Image 1 (tube, chains in turn orange, cyan):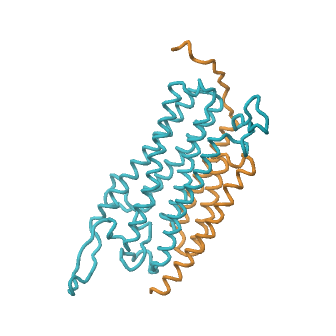
Image 2: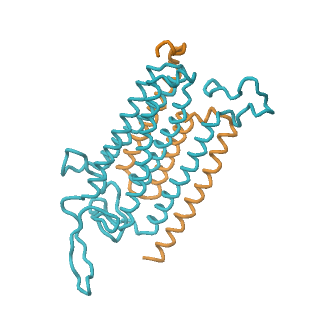
Image 3: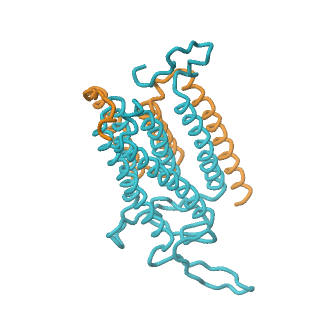
Length: 107
Length: 255
């Protein structure tokens, strides 16, 4: 079947793009290491939780924006993914608040 | 956009449906909307976890004095502190850190496979897909160990007092199942099994997809097709699995 193989032009690696991808990977690893440092230095509380939430959102932004390439897609596609997700944030806040009220009734 | 494949079929005008909406191919667009719906599912699980956890009492004592009890939600770093081959050594969150590292690295190798696919470089796609599959299998192996440890429990277990037919009896619980666990309230283990299990199942199906892509690459399917867009689509799914882990890691293991 070798004669059926199509002629394929292989382009050389885009050094700059690959370097950028490794930079993003490095950023993700550094943030994860920072999360570990915070996990063992701060006491549990609202401050610690907020730091973790911010770090998580930064990591998520890098993964979705760079690895999944959403930042470079059409703006309409980007917003049709991000806007529905923003409702989830509200739902999370509402339900965690509800849970805290339940704990007041329980204990 | 150098990154996306051709969106207009030759010879078809805009009004004949020759243009894809939002400048991406049908398959990629559908993958994005599938991932959005999958994100809702995971959000549902994590939000329920948040609701149930915040409705339980938190542990307020000194960190050193922490013991497992059904009266309050456990502190995660005291639950996940075992590492394979190091029995009895207390290494909080080290193993889950290794798992996070493995998954992030496999996401990087996946994006390098996508980059190689854009250049029609079959050998490089094969190489990076193999690394990605290896990362996925390693993660699954780690999770299997973690589940086993979680189910079997610690050597000492947790002693609880409970009323059986009106008598107060003492009983030692080892490990966890869906009814009770030594670490804390029953809900704690239930969410562990459901959330990490649902994520692990995604990793498992991701590894299968990745293998399919690898197989098609090796057999030259994408060279004959003229593009490597399938690598991109499955890549989106694989990055999503990594993305979900970022959230599970934070809300289950760190907070």
